[in-house]
Amino acid sequence: MYQLNEKYHIGIDIGGTKILAVIANKYGLIYGTATRKTPALSDATSIVKSLAYTATEAADNAGIKINHVDTIGLAAAGAIDSSNGTIIYSPHLPTLVNTPVGSMLREMLTPSIYVGNDANLAALGEKAFGAGKFVNNFVFITISTGIGGGIIIDNKLWTGSSGYAGELGHMTINALGPYGKSATPGAWESLCSGSALTRIAKERIDMGENSSLKRIVESSRAQKLTAEDIFSASIDGDDLANQIIDDAIFYLGTGLTSIVNVLSPEKIIIGGGLSNQWENYVTPAIKLMHQQAYADSWKSVDVVPSELGANAGALGAIVFSQQFSK
Image 1 (cartoon, rainbow, N blue to C red):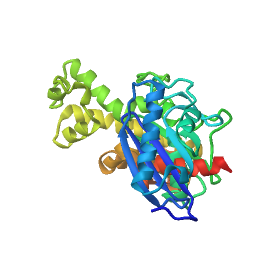
Image 2 (image 1 turned 135 degrees about the horizontal axis):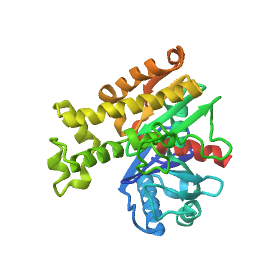
Image 3 (image 1 turned 180 degrees about the horizontal axis):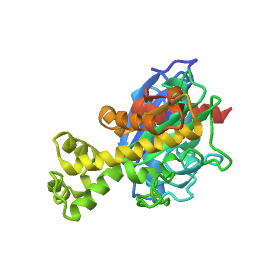
Image 4 (image 1 turned 90 degrees about the vertical axis):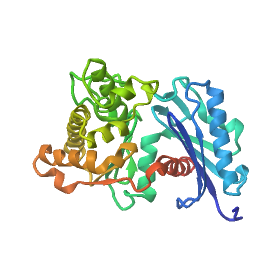
């Protein structure tokens, strides 16, 4: 419901399969949401139109007109030039290369538009409204299709000299490992993200290994094998699924160890779809990090789940839009 003296902001989080828009005030109080399927392989204009429709629908669902919205923030994966609202490259959106999404969206909507990396903005969301609210230094990690990261140092988002710092999913964990979707050999996300688990399962089944997952891989649903399928098979005692998850736990824990050894943050906040497998996946990786971390450095690091869940990126986009508009 529109209130005369309230300022409204919209945050949009565009992923490979879904667009989420939320409308909220500066305190993160959500008034309305909307979702839409991402037309990931469509042209830039079609994608931006989908963003505009989703934002407008969120405002409509809250009973607020889009021209009463103060700012809009957009969170997208990949390399983003926030200074001019350009998506340089996004792994989920292959048609958006050096695309001025901010200015294109501004032509369709009234409010000012600000664009940033999704994991970085999720870190801002956790800082403002979630598990990082009272923490000066923390690392946010999202583990889903890929792995992303955002680093908060002295209460500020740290993006380094290039503006691209925090790409934790691209740090090398095993130099002899696969490339996956990363240009880095043995990158973290190529070893223990959701897409890594499904890729490894398909490869090993194609090589002749037996598994209850074989019926999914060889069916018409071949491209729809999910990490959840692998965890379910593991719980049911499938040997291949157990091996894949055990290997991934090792790599997840090794990555956490590197973060603790290099940054020694007060907290590591973990979100994304695979964080739902906390006891089966994240907890064993934390135990491994405790064994591997330098000296007793792990004792000062608290590893916790995201408090904002699926809304972290969109709420962080709202925080980012307010900071950038000042």
